[in-house]
Image (cartoon, rainbow, N blue to C red; front, side):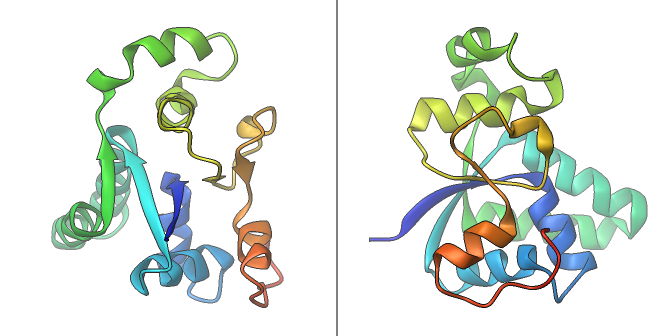
Length: 141
């Protein structure tokens, strides 16, 4: 059975921008079918926005298609109750991610963002790669 994990926006950005990164190793696990990735509607929008702003409309569209093909997407409208529970514990920009993880009972929120430190589910890409017995890159991300 595949391990279900939540992947934050920065995983996809670092994977693309830094091919030798641990984030890229996480994406490789997704591409090989070793993990099942969950993302929020917000992550989908942030990834598209980043690639449109810093690269091109075409690359942004390619990433959107990739995420729609490879990830389970949780919509904001399905997270209202959980977002109310956690809104005082995390910044608004990260609330949707935490709400999705909590609602679905996901054990790993893979990200490189210290704002998630107070949540047990948070794990850096480097620590996540180590859990699979793979050799991590020197960087944490």
